[in-house]
Image 1 (cartoon, helix red, strand yellow):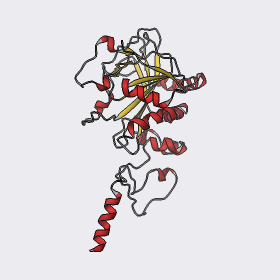
Image 2: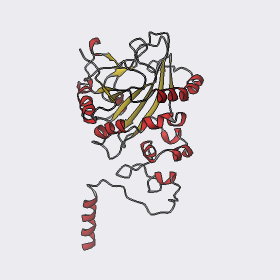
Image 3: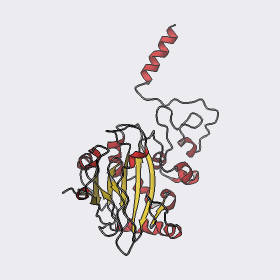
Image 4: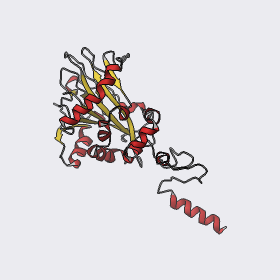
Length: 294
């Protein structure tokens, strides 16, 4: 029977990467302390209290969702930039881009009586053929204990290697049962779904997703995060939310790296700077020499 492998926070990163390559998912236990989980829960509570339930057949009718978490929760900063998580993103995403980016942040509270989502792959939002290339990787941070009864995320281990038209049998669908403070990580090509909540209480988790740096982000961080807030973020987070240029010349402002704006530099009227792939630079240099030689 399929299962979700679980490891501790101090597991060798190469072991974690191998499990993800094979299974497409893994649970890392105890990645957040009780104090960090409590702080996260307290920071999200007033926003959940003020937010209506979703109204849709995919998002559900008894589920609440919050976005823009870097604005709403200071605890989320360290989660988005967690070294273990970013080492995993380096391994899977830097194969296909020079720099990856934050795809979205979302807190999800599944209420009692909510139905299971249909199984789906998140990477279908990118409508181009990228079989064999991971376009995105997801993390579900458990704010509450995830149980069979309260709507634990469902995953289908190994389904990232399946033909896209293959359906999962019931015995292949596994609930990500885990304690609060754990994180479920799964590849964007893996079949998964939010589970049915048959309990009397809600289940809260925080999704943080990352995608290739040349793709459109699901969450528009440039509008979701005011520039004053973005300036207060560590530079690593500033670049993750999109303040960078991906070669060739994707994401410039006035021909320069947008992070210069956050750093207070005046880039108006400066000559444009090139942001090109390393492989292209010698070809352009050779071309220029030929032109100069006449």
